[in-house]
Length: 150
Image (cartoon, rainbow, N blue to C red; front, side, top):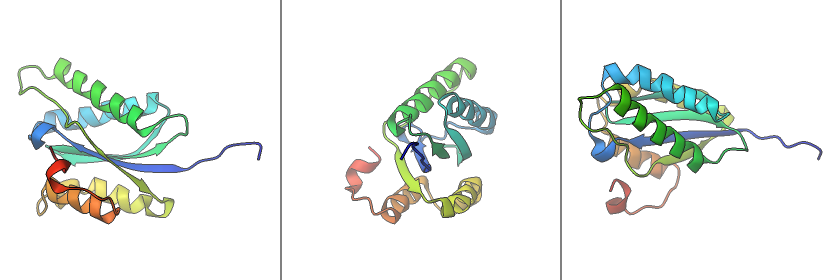
């Protein structure tokens, strides 16, 4: 085969350190745009971004030239620095150490986009912790609860 083709959709999820409510409405929209710019600069395509005050979800079409850990490191590091530089005076901002990365089939991209778009409504009834454990279980990921959220 002369060419290489791929289609890699990844649903990324991580929270603020200790799940503190640090992403208020002043920060949220600008943060999402900033993270979209980072994604674009890394040659990935951001399909959806959303969350609430203590976590973020991204659905990304990932190129073969970029690893998930490299993209997440860039997204978390750059966005954290950006928040510190642009929103001084608030609580110190930090993301949690880990993250979730879940593969998504093309047929389920619209479902995941809708799920990410409806985060505020979803979290009226579900905590981030409940949501994250459900994602791990849904994707068949083995885990020990005491190590998941740190």
